[in-house]
Image 1 (cartoon, rainbow, N blue to C red):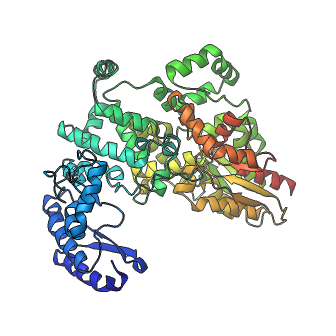
Image 2 (image 1 turned 45 degrees about the vertical axis):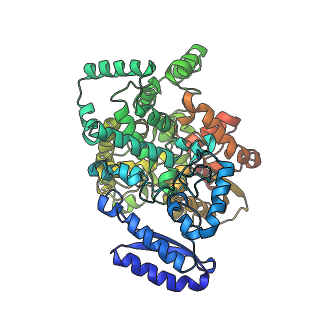
Image 3 (image 1 turned 135 degrees about the horizontal axis):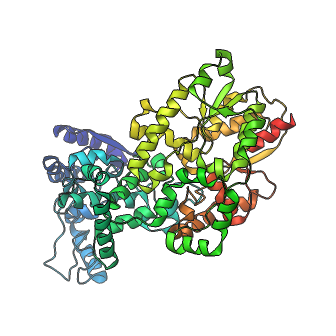
Length: 593
């Protein structure tokens, strides 16, 4: 629109939309005369969808009268019916150009112009195409509300992010395949839900039926269906599964998408339903049961490590179970570390016996399987740091957090674990003593998946280490050392709790240290993703895109730190380097004072 006409044009445009009783948003670039208008129409409602034609006709006439163009950046093709009127005597020139490039009208026919060589061809009318709302209205409204984190995707494409030093969507960056983006996965789930509705499958009750199904009967049915799949039987669900299996479940989409498309959330729900019809791969059971089995296996760490390191076992894990480079158990005696720092198990009775003053100098640590059993020295350093700061440490009794269950779609088991943990930790939280986790991905499950499943009012607060340290370290260390460290934060943490990254810097500053946060993408491990045979190569690619150059540049002098267990294990797996946790640097500082 000519800028000098824009003000009057906007007034009439608003009057037009107001006459239809519509709400709308307007934004644009006044100096260039560009206006973007977003009328709020529920395209699932046929009555509202029918307004497209009269509104478009009126807007086209209004825009032409003010000397403007109806399209500037997107959607030109679906407004093609107005092209002849706008271009007038120049339209035959467009037809001649179209004829030269596409004489048989094969390339996107009906858009922009018809070729002069095919006089019977015509332009597509604005209300003649199948719109997304036409398909969406086939999805039950109850399903729509339940799967809102997928169905609210508006196609803005923020997930098509090419910046390798940004967390948003690592699988898209590594594959450049749209099905491996949040937009692609949301679109697949949208179509899958539509098809389920067409087949009279109620996805909201299907999971409950699957959970209560006879085990032997279900196994037989899933076996038959899986054999049929191998034989080539078509099922759109397989396409959705392949896209979901490539997701890292890092939750960067949930934090960075403008409309909060949450792939891990609807991914886990899809996997639960998919595997009620088809057999699971062995690796799902190995991953899902890890938190339950590892405390028992950790009683014999040398035997476990010897078995896992044996070539036949590694071969079977990779080619049969679908797992590679499985981590080994730490050999450190954690009980000795607890005894050294007088750390006991937290019980309601012990906490109740503390005086009000004692409670102010007490913390309860919430253990996770990964740092407790695979990185035991780090867990021991955490005990030491807090103890040296003058606090009494108690350990919440170990219980499976459930994150691996959720990632793999074992939702019934996850809900049971979440309920048990919330009740157990809730009894401890009642005494006003901080509950603190260690690994960010595991800790954030309490405030995200637990809250979604149980309701936030039923889940006790579990703090990230830096959320507690940033205030507890106050006045602890006031002699600046001038040392600078470089921080690679966990992608889930920096996209879903971005303020928490700055709290590490605050804690370091109070210890007299400087912490620079490096711009980085995903490390490519994300829990067990990098250990899955089908995803190992993609994991390697993701690591090379961002983390590997940063590790090479900053990891030489031991000043590089990372707070994610999976991130540190990925660096060790890929480059053979040990990266410290930020709290280990703080411990060294406290020891030196």
